[in-house]
Length: 185
Image (cartoon, rainbow, N blue to C red; front, side):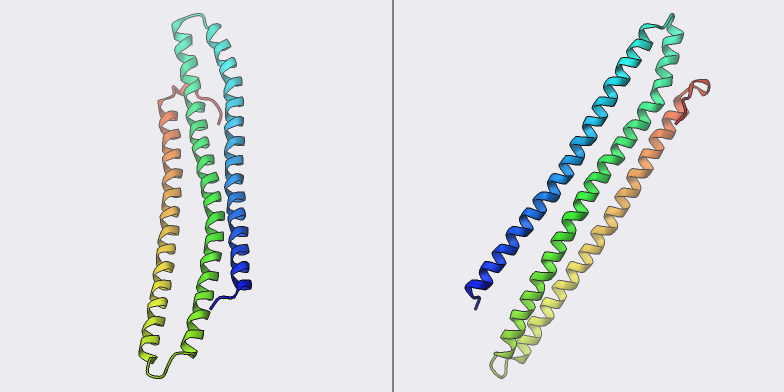
């Protein structure tokens, strides 16, 4: 049976965890807002420069050349933006995942302590039921570990795919840009 002190401690821990998770979520949002403000500021400056350049062209060939020279940097910036977004999301998810894992491990320890206490106080002849129950808890724990490892592998594959897509998008843009008009990366 849980005492009032144990309930208060559990609620306090849950509230601290909630505020910790909320803080991690806000950190991720702050990084996202900061990234978007920087991108908007840079894009505004580049738009002004590109508009000025476009207004100073003398013929259609020069305009086409200007457009081609702007294509590669735009694709590279879009790929970099996508990578930054992914990094922010992955970092925030990892931070929240660590907190969730710690909470799950603590909850499992507390649950096993309750089970151990119940086992010690179990009537004679219930050893098979107790063993079955402990086996079920261990199986559940192993299944959780397997799912966690699978999720980590899936995240790793997703990150590799994002990197590959970004690289191929930039390469495709570089291939589409006329050789004499490429800009330095």
